[in-house]
Length: 188
Figure 1 (tube, rainbow, N blue to C red):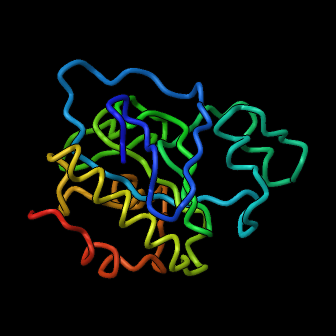
Figure 2: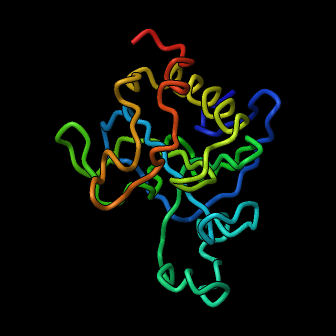
């Protein structure tokens, strides 16, 4: 269930936690939410459950903690939702607000995808298969989003790699688009 404020309140057997990020702003006036973008993230790459993603989205990640974090110093990013390897969800930004997940991006000839999209991060990498629990959680939350935001259709669900080609590669070749999209209940 998603409340009127755009916050996921419950999701079947999966836990839902809210960790408010300050890395968001308001969407442009009269802007329809009509795109869903799937991402992946792990910090450091391939390390799961360390809490570093939450720290990054909350601006408290210590860049000295790991050599790969040095490029993240001062970076202000967020996503609406993170789905961990167990399928549990952490929401950082209301779906109604503009999370900073897409960066320089374009979909169907329109730039600045953050303005009109919802970003969901899967804890993972381009090379390591996602878990069954992650697919189940992603499918369930996507169906809720499709019902709440009817301008998001199956054709308007994409990967970060598709809206930022050459710059981003996620969710990667291991993401099973057919498995995911075949279970969406939208009529489009």
